[in-house]
Length: 317
Image 1 (cartoon, rainbow, N blue to C red):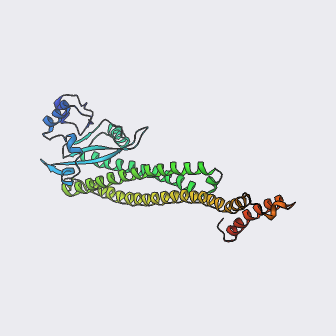
Image 2 (image 1 turned 135 degrees about the vertical axis):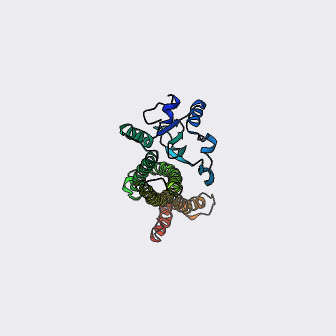
Image 3 (image 1 turned 90 degrees about the horizontal axis):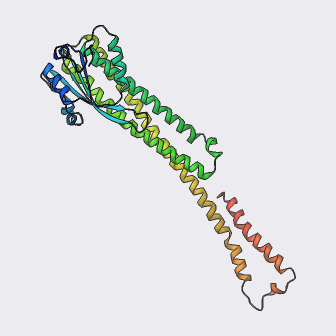
């Protein structure tokens, strides 16, 4: 809770709060808010519902909005954190699980330095901070794709490695870009929900929002649109990089198969020669030649080189 009133404080202090931030709230904290403001607190089940009518609705003159926000842990994959917003003229309520949020922390710090708080202004500032955080995550993901592109399309970085190491590195790269793709999907979904919230607020609360706040909400929607386009570009790059990495792996495997095929075809004539001279016929003229053995060895070499010369002339190797 913000406004210099602790969440465990008395009811009269709670009613003067501008922003109540319930983090992993207990039943007692939920009941205290509902008693103080006459507004219901969204349940965990309501926070995860995906229908548009459940995510955006008006009850008792208050705007009820939910959005899945990105949670970036210190270790492990990114996750979606369902967060609820209840906005009215008197108070802003946010309901979220006990997960670290840089956007919320920054706005809490800003509100702690402010002399006067307005619920709508805090809500708009939260949206702006959340969108800024999404932009930072997109920039980080774009940097990961730049590194992957440098590795794939500047082959001197791979040519210094042996084939097995190159294939292993490309497989790790495909896994890495796949994770970036999952992140892009989560970011894109969160951006869509935040955009709907901004437009819903302008539509349903425009009569008591100031012109400045309405303009800032329109700016939030515009920023989200540009970020969505940037995310779409990153998704296209991910597909390109994965196709390129898969193609390089296939080419390397085909090269190996080509070498094995050439070696097997080049070995057929010598095997044929050895098979002929391995037949113990009595009337075989070469057996009585003094140079019969060198002749057989020379014939083996010639029959080995002829297929290789043919493949080279056809530019198959």
